[in-house]
Image (cartoon, rainbow, N blue to C red; front, side, top):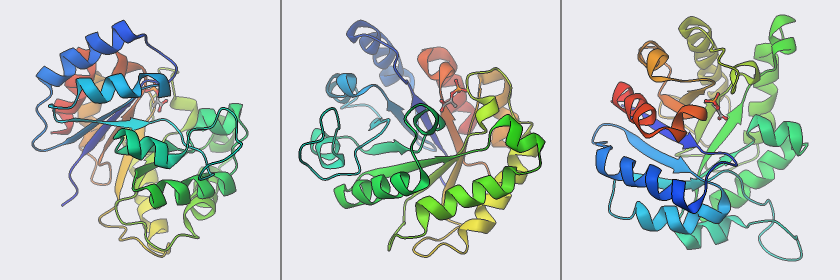
Length: 247
Ligand code: PEP
């Protein structure tokens, strides 16, 4: 019922040369009849990535967008600009944006409005820090992030939520399949009270040190519908192996 999605977050990595190498490899190898596949390069690499993936099943997204439609916002990139370029997806509320750019749930919500208005498909990230998990607050933190970002929108059909425990991102630590499943089931239950979406149809991705070696057992969980992949998305064979595991 929910087609898996595997999205690669390339973060601030790469060069024009590496984009050619990575997308060249993925465009020929990725077979995704049963899984949606996306890559999210840095803004400056989006036109090149869109060109290289044009005749492949790989779709392209951005890692962020502005909350504003247009205007005097130096350094910002509008959702409509991304859509105009041909981007399909946009990642919003990544924990690195929340930590280094002080993005609040209200700002994530405003960006979500802009993304929806532009016709982009949003991937909204939520997740707790290690301290929050250890003090038993993980569910409350995630519930607040979901409510803060999602409550004010009329239509959230097609929304994707990525659960990314901050302590598992880029650390080599992964939530156990049971920890991830428990939180995904909790998120799905929370989504039932958010207007404008069908929680059973909403895809929930896990993110946090997903690798070929742990993808199978994560994807075997009933409420895990794919992955948002950081480090392993920069290695074509690893990303391909994760896509295969999702399929
Ligand atoms: C991410 O940044 O979204 C991520 C999940 O990174 P990594 O896979 O490297 O932990």
